[in-house]
Image (cartoon, rainbow, N blue to C red):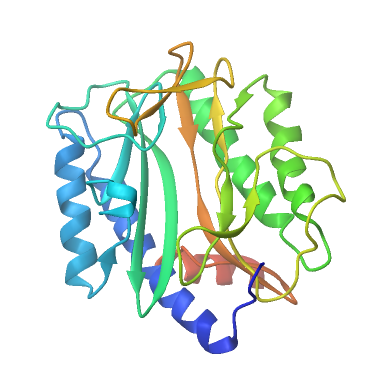
Length: 261
């Protein structure tokens, strides 16, 4: 069952969304050649706890880190390591916080120094797919409309769309109903209602959509070893349209200014 959030619930979702967005942007600014994913993990852990929140990932089914740090051909659930990132890498940073009983979940793929045009395009299209999935998250649309919005754009560029892992409902728990695949048929699956909160998260591969899991039983990689990108926002469905919850104060101000022009 999908639970709609009350006005009080949404205020708490906004608070945790802004909190984890600030962490995401702080980590983005830290990414450069020579830094390790373990450095980034430790920084995220401290920032989340200093804000009075809990890193949601730690202990989730035994996951040991505050963030999922997935480099190059790693898609999701990557373990943090002391190895330095290299010029030309890309890194997906996925993170969540629990605050006042609610969860905010977000991800972004970040270039390490200068990257190839091929990788720049992959990141851009993944971000565009996220924006299109969010735009489709409207009252009286259906979950299939979200997947189709992502799929039709990704397929224009020939990318493999990861099917083994999906977006999801979110609220008091990180993973709530419904599952939100990054593919689908318009007008199918559950009807979207005001108060629903979703985590939309396209995962696109330069090559095959097929995945495999490494021996750590967590890190998911592309089956052909080609790069992957991941982007995610938590949103609330309102009568006026989708509201992205995982934005920083500055991003919200810019968005408000842009909508006023």
